[in-house]
Length: 434
Image (cartoon, rainbow, N blue to C red; front, side, top):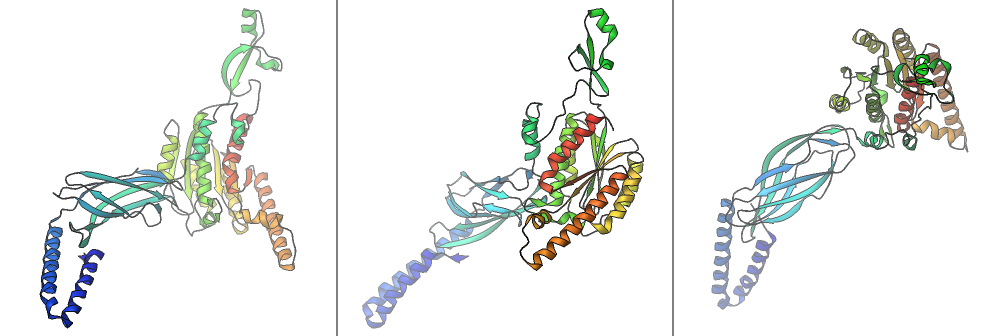
């Protein structure tokens, strides 16, 4: 129980007649009456305060929320007492969430319900826990206040932001894909799966002409093919220490996850199955699957993946994948490699290309590009520039060695990876090399 400023002010007013009573005896009796009245009111208010029932509580928040997006939380309080309650409310949201609109004060009439809302901002993926709610209840006369805690635990799952996938969904028609940088190679009915018969068009090659159908219809009829479906795509997701690097758009692992989810959506629309293997920390295996729930399934399996302090063991991950994925697939390694690890990466690629088509998506830090682009004005800048140029040269040589072993190489900044990866996938589909 804590006295309110109202009770403290009343005690302060009580001091004035007490001082007058020292000098004038006529003030002694009024002071005693005033003190007794205040004491009686304070005790009565305290007694009524202790009899007040704690309001009932219900919290409304989505169980799955996106990282980096403000999310609404609603609290509903029900007053079961016979008098109205003036309360101050503070919800114990996850500690690493940003918050707007807390604490809040409200009045709940007797036997009625009131609600309030505030917003939270998850800053990283994973689990978030709401533990309960602090209530500061004011007594009926406003002379006391009491803090009460309502235990009301709740768990939320913070997923990668779905905006890129939603954006693709809105632009997923052939005439709009170019708006987001996805290239569609225009081809004259080429592919590996038969699609339909149609009239001959200028530019069709001779092997497309169906001579039997042409003789029946007495005009040239061409066969139209589409990209082969029912292929398999497997991501190898590096969760090692180098994926902890933070750029302005977030950690490399988060950017790699966004790219993986976007390409999974595209591949599912193309009729292909998608799976993944994480390594360099917690190892998780999701066999390739297809259908409308593939992206949701990947979200459920990856939303709480975190980068670790371990070094990525590419060769061990490749040895693990080979017996798990026996059918030929497009294997995409999402990583941020360093010079001391590239021999291990080369051995892993050499093993994987025996059965699979391998793409190495190697992220690099935006700070490297800034050093190269920044003018050199002093000795320190010249030394930094030369060190970065040497490092990039070694990186390029390592990529050339990987390319000679049969891998396709993507050297990309994290924020450019989603669209670059989709374009590479569509090129692979169009070429028929898978």
